[in-house]
Amino acid sequence: MVVKTEAVVLKTVKYGDTSKIITAFTREYGKLSLIAKGARTSRSKFVSILNPMSCIQAVFYLKESRDIHLLSDASLSRVHKSIVEDPKKTMTGFAMLDALNTAVHTREPHPVLFDHLVEALDVLDLAEQSPVNSLVAFLIALLREIGYGLKLDACVKCGGELDREPLAFESQFGGFVCGRCSSSETGPVVAMNQLKALRWLERPSPGAWSSLSLEPMESLKIVHLLAGHLCRHVPGARRLKSLSLLESTVVG
Ligand SMILES: [Zn+2]
Image 1 (cartoon, rainbow, N blue to C red):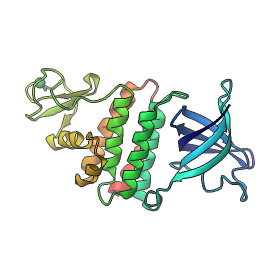
Image 2 (image 1 turned 135 degrees about the horizontal axis):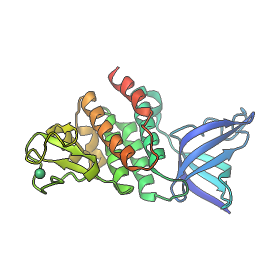
Image 3 (image 1 turned 60 degrees about the horizontal axis):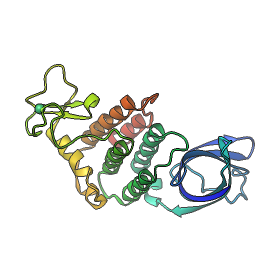
Image 4 (image 1 turned 30 degrees about the vertical axis):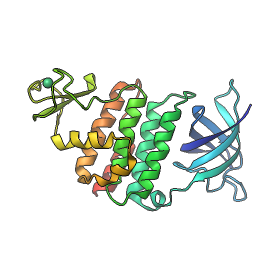
C-alpha cells in the first residue's frame, strides 16, 4: 500500500554504498524505518532532505510484513533554519528526538504527540531566549501522551497545596510532595520556582513558553527531572545520551 504522511526524521544510518535507512516518526503510522535507496548519491532527490529533525512529507510503500519500508518520495514540509544554525537549539532539538524515540514503540500512531513535536520545533526555531523551555514543554506533553503525566496542582500524598518548601519529587507517584509530607525518605528536593516553571510550560499556549526566563542550570535540572521520570517508567529505556551534549552546549 502506498501511503503519504507527514513525518519527522529521528535518526539516519548509512546502508550499503549509497543508501540510507531512516527512523521516522510519522503522524499517521507512528515510528517506523524507511529505506531511501541511492539517497547518498549527489543526484538523489533525497540529498539534503533526510537529516535528523527534518520535517518531511513522505511517500512510501507500507508492507505489513516488513520492518523496513521503501521510501519513494520525500519533500521538506517545514524549514527550521535557526535550529540548524544555532548549536544550543540543535542540541535542544536532538534531546526532543531522543526522548521521543525512547518513549514510543514502533508502529504505534500518536498523532497528538506528533503535533506536539512539530509545534515544539517551530517554537524552538523562533525562540529568542531560553530555547530549552520548548524542550521542557515538549517533555511535559510527551509524558502526558504516553500515560506518565505529572500532577502539578497538588501534593501526591495529602492532596494539599504545594505551597510550602521543601518540595520533593516522587517519580513513583508521578508528582510532588509538599513540605508537610516530605521527609528524608522522599525523593529529590525541588525548588518552588522549578515547580512554577513546570506549571507555566504545561500551558497549551506555546507563545508563552519563551517569555519565561530561566537560568540555563535551572532549566537543565528540570529537564533531568523529566527525563529521569521518563526513563524510570518506560520499560527498557536507557539514559538519554543527548542530555550530556545538551548540557555542555548550553552551560559550556
Ligand atoms: Zn502533602
